[in-house]
Amino acid sequence: MENVYDIRQYLKKFGTIIYTKDPIGDLHLMAEDLQELYKAGILPIRDYQVARHILRMEETRIKRQRGDF
Image 1 (tube, rainbow, N blue to C red):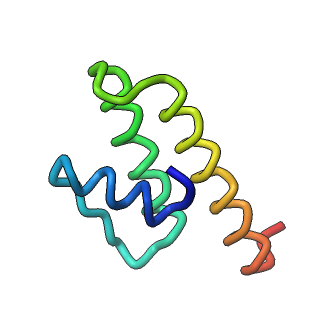
Image 2: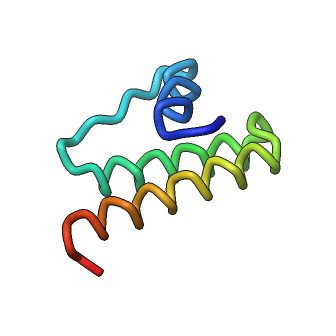
């Protein structure tokens, strides 16, 4: 996984489609779903860590763009 799109595509394989019109809310929901996949042993630790990092970086980017920082 290299970006948020890749994460969305990965989650789609498990029937998860997240779109709430709140980009940060979407990122949080994706993070929760990834955590559940990791806990279930489906998602390897390294992939989980990379995906979480991507989501955190995207959240930071969105907040800076909005002026929240």
